[in-house]
Length: 552
Image 1: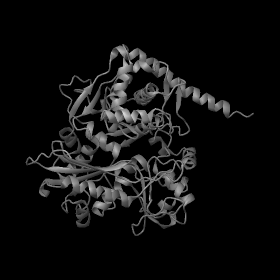
Image 2 (image 1 turned 120 degrees about the horizontal axis):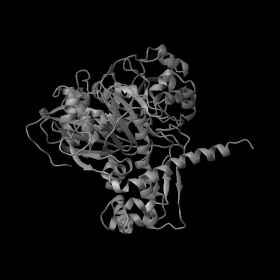
Image 3 (image 1 turned 90 degrees about the vertical axis):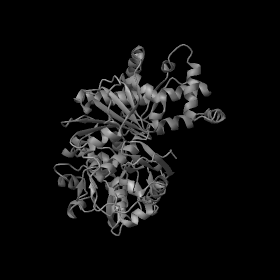
């Protein structure tokens, strides 16, 4: 646990529920982490593309970590609580008890995770409707959004789940309900994942068109009728029951929540950049792109007016920064892809042993190993004849094509540690090339971005950060606090407490620049060529698919 700073100042608790763990932090009004805790959460994968979790397990983990960070602090100094979480679907019955989202009937597993792709046929049918709401998700709805998952439940678990369901929550909203007993939903998940409109509300014709008219019939009470902006206070704050479970004072302010990636954006994108020689200095905040990179990656661009970008989600009004429109690009697997590539390699046991002998993480060891084999060339040039297309779990942005697969070209008849290191490097580069693809698509549509702001687990990897700078040609800003997602969640609690007049003020006060990584201009030509190959890979993949789908 981090050392505590007990100055006479106010603190806020941020709780983040990611793919594999629940985390909490005690954050000061200056944006400094005073305490941190993490606890694993359970995941189930009963079959391919089915990913499930338990809301009871997640809440229990939240209670464990929150009690840890609140220990030893004057309770009167804790002024607010904010939640963020993955955009997973929580299903409860009319008495708020968990319902099964699986064929096995296990009601403990009542969450369809964000990364679950079981509803592929449902989303394909939804996209064939070409309904007007789809223009706000880049023209094509993702299987990771909630309408296809809801339709899957209706069509596949009618008796055991759908007919008994009383409440469908996005996970961030479930957590704020558990804390306050208030059923209000946050604008962020509803707009980003459920097709809600900030100015028009629910579109009745859409739900009827996709055969989910049930929601219209009950006046949307199962999916949300009261909607608040992120950071708005909920009811009378933390209930006595939840306060006891979390180890926090009853009645402290609890904020309307955010999706985890959006909390990361909130935690980094508003920082004061004066004195760092960055192109975004003295420019609007809209010149910044927040990249939240963990298991997956999200690319958050904001604008004063709506910008419609093909294959990029949004524009969503006030979904992250109040008063601004949000476009959200993304890569479905990034950290998970690196892990998959590295752990699946024949030399992985050797890597584990050598990293352990040096008391290093496997990625620190791989980075140093690459330095040792690069000779006189820059590290990145080692992959001159090794190329990866990273869509091992389909393409979220900017192609919005669930059917795309991963590709590797340039393999040799060897499987030693050098080969593993090179494949790791090529995979990191492929993820950065994917970011460039998203960035260029956003700029073609009207965004003007000059600086990247990275946060999340992968931003702790210097190779990952440098590759993003070199391949996009843009400087990368890293936060002073590496746990920017938790800072973002705490910013919500700070706003709900009334200690700041606005989300933007809290962003500027609590988000701080830590390090800036600039691109190496002398390597630009090499990465321009890598990018050309990158685009050729997907072009060829589509050609191969067309050939194989020809009538014989």
